[in-house]
Image (tube, rainbow, N blue to C red; front, side):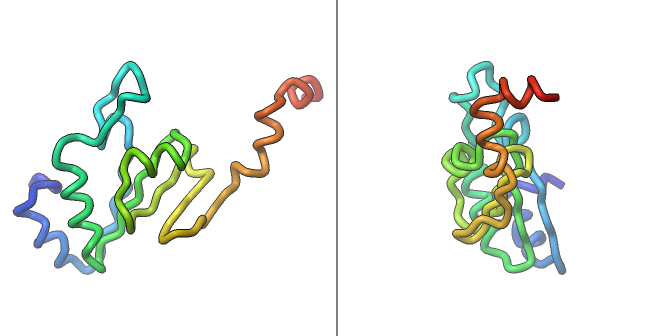
Amino acid sequence: MNLFSIKNLSKIGGTKGLFLFLDFDGTLSPLVSDPTQAVLLPGLKRTLTKLATYSTVRIMIISGRSLADLRKRVGIPGLIYAGNHGCEIFFKKRYLLRKGEKYKPTFARPQPFLKNS
């Protein structure tokens, strides 16, 4: 069964519960040599938007991309977005996890941190 075919959406919506964990690069978008050129595969935005309307379905899009970049590229309300390999998680207009924030100073100036390790 092709999970993402429109004719199967009603079957999926009728399930007792479904949680889809989907990676962006290489799954929802083809791998490209220039990451700034990555876009959703044709038809997926419509399909994911429809799936997100079912109360029994939750969809999480996971990526190594920044959360802001991921949300901009997918742009579907109601999904759970996990950026920076799960260090940032966003759902329903609020952050559920922002672990990466406390490490920003370390990554901005890694030399002192690396010297002491």
